[in-house]
Length: 407
Figure (cartoon, rainbow, N blue to C red):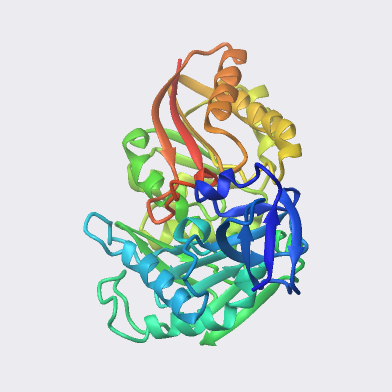
């Protein structure tokens, strides 16, 4: 097998079972290597460390499949890893009151670059690394096997999968030397709207064109948490997407909800979701506007709210973008703090994996202080439990949030 030898002292992360090898850690390459090919990684003194997929175009030159030397990277390997990931979503203590969840969470499920989300009877996949792309056909075949049998009869009301759809249309594929890819991989094309259940709430999802694979499944447990703060409240939902937080707030008895999202089409779907749940759409105002501009307009007009939700897109795609991201988070949290009634609730998130939780807390603290307000952390929030974090891969905890009371 082709082999990658690391520079002296650059093996520590692999010894700790971290799944990435950066190009700068490589001392020498022996053998012919194609994109996505399985390679051995050895230390400077030739001690075997791991097997992984080689990516000649990415800064992450190898994504590790296995730390077991005699484990063959074959269709059997992927069958076992996929079965383990699905089983983890069915074990005692895992919630089953929803019809959509993440089945495979990339590195944290031991399958770097592979994401699979289940929306009712359809699977939506992303293959975002060279290794994932190389094994795509086999992975799709395994998913077909798993969901055409009764192997996992309790998985989210599991039945035969009607279709597997690809949404590998994100920028990270370019870093792997791959072109964007979308389309049906197996079975039927998903309908324009897939209806899903989340506790007592229902949502319509555009899995073919929506953000990520169509819905922010990682916020499910946080949506279930906010109702206790929203009864009788005037709520502002910023970066609303298709209004899931707003639906949860209205269902909890919010007096009214204002959604801000730049896309009118997404806000139309937000209205559909409100009506789908039998809620009064007259209690909702949708503003197809830029959040930063609208928050400033609200500040200047002395508009105020009882609860403000900030769930912005990723502000930092690379380490060099962290300073700019800090300014963006500071800006929106400062404006939100000024708009809250005394004792109001700020629910604020960062989904930038490169943003450390302690730095995010400091940004929110500085924003609250500069607004002339005092704040208290009521609760810390993370991604849903079907988006686990491998203990050796702290980068897997990308979503962090705070519920703060602001005085």
